[in-house]
Image (cartoon, rainbow, N blue to C red):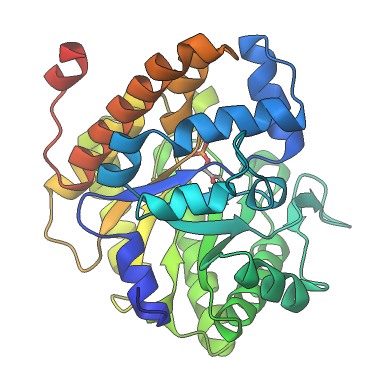
Length: 341
Ligand code: 13P
């Protein structure tokens, strides 16, 4: 495959394909395993992820790339094959999460800043050798309007860090996924999500230009425009689509390689329905697909529940969600298809 950044980015958003975000840190995957009653060990994490990477139908037909965690990119399958080789054999591209997580922003209670720039150039060189051709950095913007969260300082600091990260990735021959996640956890309405997301994306692209990042060799991983979970309101897919596309038309350059959404706490079907509605009102200047963690993995995780005997059922559950999101990326999903399974 071509090693040009813009070609890698194009392959990541190839028609009807999207990304599997399997880059949960050890702390996060433990929380997911707690729910299904599985102890989180290096071997159980390996077995679980190997199950997904060996799901041939899902991987070859619907998944363009996999975001890995540092432990996983170095791990071998039970039979000794590096997990990265199993992913590559399906035609999917291995990627790597390189941020060191969101930490409290000093002086700004409630705001966070994502860390991980120190030593990043050297780590990227290592990850390139291990096979990664794209990377991910997640900035976290919470909303609590009454408390002045997010501050302009938080939005600015996170956008600046994303730009420095993206420039270092491109220097290393790695496509940066830039992820400025405006959380859906708050009590805010959909209009507030739109306003905060607009301020965030405006600042992000100002910083990416200033850092001389080549936009064609980047992928944006944004939130959709949604009402906060604690607001008690769920917006219709049509409203989500209309507001999300309006936001992107105002703030996201047409030149970027593509857009791959996070699921952010939406239910599996909500994440699919909203992506479908977004693509159904196209054509748009960019490809819009999925880069889901929870919304792709919740069903297979439950089906697997840590038992080797459940591997086939878990792979089928993964294939189903991946296929539904594949259709949504093409604007061809229908709710009845969920029942059929
Ligand atoms: P979710 O789809 O579960 O939000 O995870 C995507 C991701 O990679 C967040 O960084």
